[in-house]
Amino acid sequence: MMCDDLQIAVIGVGGRGGVADYAHLPGKGSRLVAGADISPDALDAFAKRIDSDVLLYDDYRRMLDRRDIDAVFIASPDFCHEEHAVAALEAGKAVYLEKPIAIDIAGCDRILEAAYRSGSKLYVGHNMRHMPFVLKMKQLIDDGRIGKVKAIWVRHFISYGGEAYFKDWHAERRFSNSLLLQKGAHDIDIIHMLGGGYTQRVHAMGALTVYGDVTDRRKPEEKPQIRSVPDLWPPSAQTGLNPTIDVEDLSMMQMQLDNGVFASYQQCHFTPDAWRNYTVIGTEGRIENYGDYAGDVEIRLWNKPPDYKERGDEQHILRGDIKSHGGADPKIVAEFLQFVRGEIQPSVSPIDARYSVAAGCLATQSLRLDGRVMQMPNVPESWANTLRYPLDQPSNTLEVQ
Image (cartoon, rainbow, N blue to C red):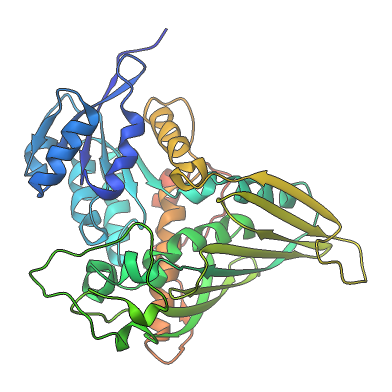
């Protein structure tokens, strides 16, 4: 028998806030009852989309004062995550927080401290952990098909970068820190997941190589015009870019994990195609994906030497779904709701999310300091013991001195 519906609110109802719609299941365990946003248009669209008697707020603080709200989805811009998450956790709400958890390490740690001290549940929306191609690669690794993982190489092609990241706040360091962090946090988390450890040291290179030369910029008072389907080519033909652009459009980082695994992540925002390519090399073979979540996805396995085999020794075909991040979004929402009810432990912990952001932040510092090697600062062991769920995840902790 289903218990009473969880009463759920949303901070940041536009854009990525739409992921909370999957939690609106009146009579089936959860319902959206309130939303907060500084945009009247976004609030109006939210109310129409939910088609329910939701209460609307232009001040999230008043919404958090409501005792009947059990959980809050936070999908505000990245630079607001710290403020909103700390407030919601301290108000005793269970929190679903979009990645990245924050835009700097200090912000991440303040959120973790708020979760630790309040005892409120914190879930971070790393939806790639639910993508079929990632789960299949993890299964092959866990089944011992390539031996012990030693190296992970990731190439990330982003054809829509000019539209999605260089026309609004994402293009400015003060709001996003870097795209190596903002966009790369997904992939760094998966590198940690597949590699079985957290980044210990990192260095990086990168630059603003294309969009900095585009002179067609919108005025500060003009609203960004972002097309859902990029139709301008080449990227230098982009129009209406953000007035200020000081983040890199080409970045690459190298990491050593705390268990000795070596990894690299490369990101480009002006490619003609859009997908991620993962290569995982073990002591007895390697796997590589072709395609990620649009159309058919193929995982190729090589574990028999020595000749060249274009498609490997085995092929695992998966059906991709271009919608909802390959079908991952409804799965992470369902997992969050089960977590709030105490039915399961989630697949990603706040500690995991913090280390993915920290690695991206350190890589950003490195590339802006001529590739200097950066060392990972660890979280207090007491936080990790409380917030690292599931408990079989890798640990990289030291008491803060």
